[in-house]
Length: 357
Image (tube, rainbow, N blue to C red):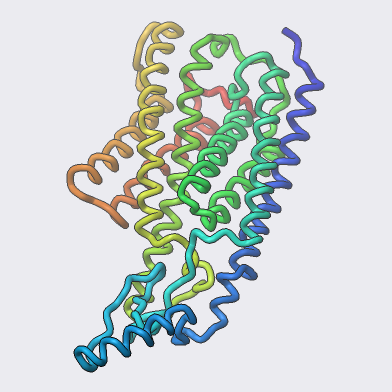
C-alpha cells in the first residue's frame, strides 16, 4: 500500500509537540526542586523544631517528667537522612528530616499535566506513523526509539501515580527529551516500506515484545542511576560528610524505595525480553532456516538476558540488594544499549535494519 504522507506529517508534528511538552514538564519538575514548598522549607534552620511536633513534645515531656524524670528522647525515623525525635529536634550528627517526597505541590501538578499532554501527543505520533506505513511503527531505528520512549514514559507515568514518586520525573523525562531530540534530528527516517525480510506478522510479535521490554529497562536503568546517587548522598550525610545538591536529594524518595521501583520494573520487562528472544528464534527459523546462528544481535540479546537473569537471581537467592544489584542491572542495560546502538549501526549482520545510511 502507498505511504500516507498526511499521516506521516501528522506523526512528525506530534513528536515535535511531544518534545515541547516533555521539555516544559522537565522545567516544571526542576521548578519544584527549586521553588516548591519542600525547597522553601529548607530555608528554615536545620535544628528548628517543626511546629506540630513542639506541642507533642511539650505534652510528652510534662507527663514523662512527672512519671519518670528526665531521660533520653525516643527517636522516630524520618523521611530523609536524619532521625526525628519526639521533641521535634534532630539527633546529633544528622541532618533535619526531609519533607514528604510524595507531596504534590503546584509545580508537580503542572508537571503532571504537561507529562500527560506530552504522552497523549506521543501516542498520537506512534499511531499516526503506523497508519502512514500500514504496519506496526517500529520497523527501523527511528521508529524503535520513538516507540521505546513512549513505552518508557507511559510505564513511568503509571509508576509515578501508583507510588507517588513524582520527583523522579525530572530524571526520567530529561533523558527522554534528549532521545526524542536525537530521533527527530539525527536518526530521522522518512516513512517508507520495510525490506522484504521484515514484511512478516512476526514483526508485530517479536519486535513488539522487545520494544516493551526495552522501554521498561530504560526506566529501570534511570532508577538505578538515581538510586546510586541518592544512596551515596545518604551515606555521606549519615557520616556527617559534606554533601552536594541537598535540595534535590532530600526530597527524593529514600534510596530503598528507588531500588525497589527499579527491581519491580525489571521484573516487568524480563519476561517480555525472554518472550521476544523466543519469538525471534522462531521467526529466524522461518526466515533463514535455523533457530539460532549467533548473529551479533542474537548474541548480545542473549548476553543481555543472562545479565538481567543474574540480577534477578542475585536478589531472589543471594539477597543482593542496593548498590551491588544496581551495578548488575546497569551492566545489563549497558549490554542492551551496546546491542541497540553499536551492533545495529556499525556492525553488519542479519539484523542490520536500522534504516540509516
